[in-house]
Length: 384
Image (cartoon, rainbow, N blue to C red):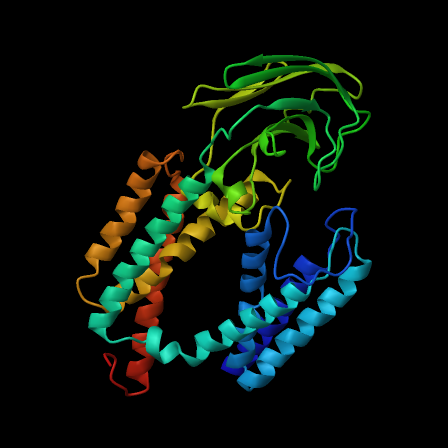
């Protein structure tokens, strides 16, 4: 039964790899790259590659495949994917990706092989692992706030209307007038003949080295805002803020007003008379720094935020149940959920992310209890 589940997980992880790596990602291709990582989102892409093949390594090892063969399979699958990417729009095959994916597979193997050491630790060490996991989760949440904080790089700045920027679309409409302000901008523009399928800037405020200080864009019927943040310096992803369906009432070639304003505590986006304020990021948005799927519906992004928070604390619940005096670890988690937004630029933790945290703690606790019950049925000592 265990082997069958592992085989199913292996098939699912392979399908996931093919889904994320063989879809078109734009129009431009640049051929093979022989660097470990490069580009504006180099670190984000490296982390994507390191995480993508871990489930494959875990599932194949659980299925009983020898570790050396698992690593070889991961490397061959990565080579096949990169080879096929030569003919997929927007994909650039890379030798660095093959290396990263092979290392990722090996990390998955290591997690299974070393499981008796880190997963089934004795009670005293489990308690310390629970506290360490809680502290790491809080540091990840704090890092999320630090990376997403709005900054103003050194000037001078220049405003470019409907610019053609790498990795973005070109807006086919026209900007007629710009009204700048203090931490705000308002545009009078003519709508494109059809809604753009990719994020297409109406205006970009660029620094002396083409840093994207502020970018107001349209994607389908959404008005989006990107501002300069430390994540750009670290070559992570740059998630946007959105006025969803703000352009819905704007017909092709209509004249419309698009605006954004920010008083340092409240970011607003507006299209004509439709405005939404109190926009911002939460601790659950940390995963978007690694991979940001533009255009996904809000409910789906919210579910992933909830699962991200759950994943951050599931180890706290698991090792807390196996250890002693686990209340300290849970207290650290609660303090992080409350205090990290207060000391960063993040919004207060929303209710669905609290649910994710409680769910992660609960799943970890129940997993530990299930393991103990299984050990009892097998007649073994439940407290190694």
